[in-house]
Structures are given as structure tokens and as C-alpha cells.
Length: 249
Image (cartoon, rainbow, N blue to C red; front, side, top):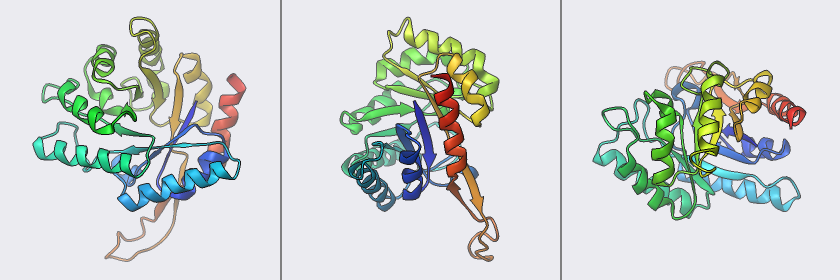
């Protein structure tokens, strides 16, 4: 399956247009790796997903990234409280799932914190994001994720780019299908290009995730970030990823 990371309602439309199954909705993707979108943005994205489905396009699920700050994934009590509140807000806005990542100071999956986020999701799907890629043994971490109630993990196989971690992705996929009996899906993500899709699918992953983004130049001046511009979902890259996936199905 194909998942796109998007940052606005138009990204949802692009995803639906290329037949993506899901979107991960976030903001600040290029600068931070992604942060929690506003409540208004979540509502607008969910409304757009419903609208395109009503028009006959492929239904697309909105999964909301819950990550209130950049930096590492060890949560203090206040951090966890904010994330629980954000998960509940996403569910109330109609999200089909949430995307989270929590680690202990020792660099292991924080099972207790993850269980609290799963409970807050109230039956919606919970994806564990690339926090798993800084765990010393991501294969062993899969057991903890499954036991805490996650249904999917987004991972590059511990490498900066998923194509460089394709060997470990294969091991993780085999572990998820074998010892875990398919209770946890492996989704390859991290610097994915359309030309990488074939090798990632061959590794046995369940889904491929990419941002398919490009930057629109827009000078906001010294009070608005200068000439950094902003990111949008590129339909051409999204279509290329879809074609690459279809070619190996």
C-alpha cells in the first residue's frame, strides 16, 4: 500500500488522486521531520478526505502525526499529557488513526507511554513512527510495539534512508509475519524515491511511505522566516511512486 506524508488538504486530494490508502498529516515536515498539525487543519483534512470519497475518488484515511515538539522521543509527564490530549483531539476530529513515537531514557520503546496513547486513540489505528530507528535493536522492538497495541511501524530499517536499510527491513518484515503472526505491519519510509519502491516491496514490507514534496518559493520577510518558502505535495512525484508500486504488484 502507498501512504503519503502531507501538510494540507490539497495533499489529501493528491493522495486520493493517485490511489494512496493513507495520509500522514503533519506540519514542518522538511524542517523538523514533522510536528502535530493544528485542530483546524485536522478537521479540514478529514473533511477533504470525505469529500473526495463522496465524489468517487479512492477513499483515503487521515492519520495524524502527534509530535508536539522537535527533538528526541523521551517524554516527560507534561509531554505525555499533551500527546494524550492531541490523540483524543485527532480522534474527535474524525482521524482514522494517529502516528506516535515514545522511548525510554535507555533508548527502548516506552511501553507504558505507548499504551496510554493507544488507549487515548479509542480503537483507531496507532502507527509507531521512526523513533524506532534510533533503538539499538529495532527487530526486538517490534515485540514491544505489538504488545502495546500498535498496528504498524514506520521505519527505514535504522538507516538514514530506507533504501540503505532494505536488508534490515526484510528482517523486520519476516519477524512481523513470522513470530508476530502479522499483528504488526512494516511500512518502509525515510527518503523514499519512486525508484526505490521496487526494492522495498521486494523486501516484504506491507506499505511504502513518502512525502513526495517540493518547495514553493515565497519570501515572507524577516518576520516570517525569510525566503524559505513552504512545502506542498508534488503530484508528479506521487504519480511516479504509484506507478512504481503498480509495476511490482
